Image (cartoon, rainbow, N blue to C red; front, side):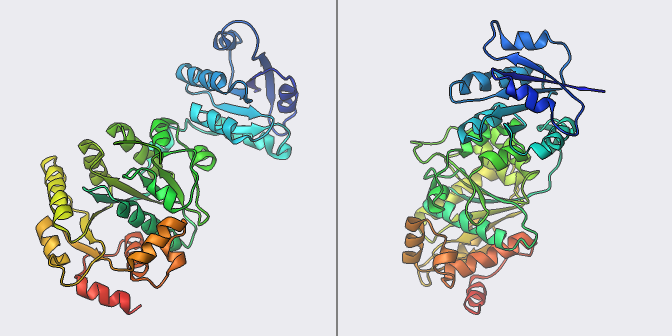
Length: 396
């Protein structure tokens, strides 16, 4: 039985190129993009179609993206693919964000074109598969008080977890904390696709979108941050954020999420309940300690048991007054870690865009976070008294 494909394009070369695809019994119909009338109505008038391919170029990005969105609203079960004369990143991103399953480039990979088309026709809708599986582990790094230390810890936890993946499993850093864009800046990533974009695209998110649009650090770490030019609090819909996290669990082995109390309380509750481990980040100051105590109270009033939560004390200093063990008792949480380190090393890391693991591997912060990351990735117990924890770090 022949597969019926429709190509929405002005250049007939796409029709002949696809018609000659090896390994697929394909019947290709050309629907001129510049023809009169509504393209969707003309498409429906053709009768049955199993696959739709839409040409993109710099002059028609918005129109073709809108066509794909309208098409999928009416024919959600039909796979849609973007086409282009080359793999211009703007064309690819526009197509994928509109809901295209893939993007094909004219006369590229001709030998495997038939296999690509066959795979597309066998695939179920992208929104169904990830939402049904819950395989990836989620770790939240949370603090009531917005601070660059949240993204910095989340970044290094994610990098530490990635280093522990012998089979090269994918790791994602999702930074929705403020200051906006901190994780991307610390990793020196010029991100054109943000966490807000991914939240908006949650129901379209699949492996192809990840490979095409998600920024990736040289280490292999995938990273989504808020736009760095965002002013004020991020306007994030709690339900859409949680939907994205559920989808991402099917696409990544480990996800580290940085967040703070600028997010709506339902979002914080949802992440706390969803996370395999939740790390409350505090320091020994009265201000942040009290802010975190109020945050924990709000979470508990909303029904969070916080059974998988624990305290991480940042920039621990002896004889400062508030000892980590006392803070843990105040918060009614186990103590996961008390981190030390040279703050000047941390500042150099933030400013240079190089992880502290690269710049100062023997810094106590590097050693402490690596031990914490290894425990998270392996599922080991995290409860440790600060003195013995610090002694273990110094011991290597």
